Amino acid sequence: MAEIEKSAASVEEALEAALDELGISEQEAVVQIVQEPRGGFLGVGAHEAVVRVRPRAGAPVGAPEPDEDLEQQGEVAAQFLEGLFDLLGLEAEAEPAMVEGLMYVDVWGREAPDDMGILIGRHGATLDALQEVVRSAVQRVVQERCRVTVDVEDYRKRRRSQVVSRAQTVARRVQRSGKPEALEPMNAFERKAVHDAVTGIGGLETASEGEEPDRRVVIKRAGRVPRETARPDRV
Image 1 (cartoon, rainbow, N blue to C red):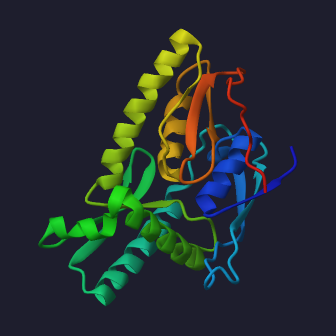
Image 2 (tube, helix red, strand yellow):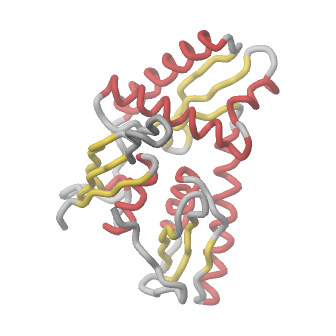
């Protein structure tokens, strides 16, 4: 299949849309970031993120990214964050850690962990913004797509565990009933956790539908079209 381009408010959202349309996982794809998103001033000069994605020829499904690449990205992200915290006067430290095949950069408060809530924000909104800043910084250094996830006081890991548990419960129900079910709206990182969790359950597939911030994952039996019209993202 030929490569495709997708645009969205963030690189993660554009990538998710492209993978959905191609029907492949991120590990099976070659990803090129064509354009970073930019907010502009009062809407002037703003533009979305654009990614170009094509299937990776001959790559085995689930092939992990080389450890040395992820380790380098983790170190770069941790150094950037600690420099940022020094500028902001925050008593925090950042440390790379590989957990369940994902490279996290864990942020911890040195003296008052409760103060780290400012880096998380309501429903993780500030953390999502911090993730975008770190992603851009890492990509400038390593000249490839950033695969690092920033976490603060294990917020993302706890949330991911909750999302995976919820997805597996719904997936088993869909297996029994055959009726598609949509989960609650989630951000791009949480939707990816759902896609990954359902991949290991036979006879099911997932698709993301809707527009941000109400974009959600639908779980259905493989090959079955939901009663609601499933609309792939378009550029």
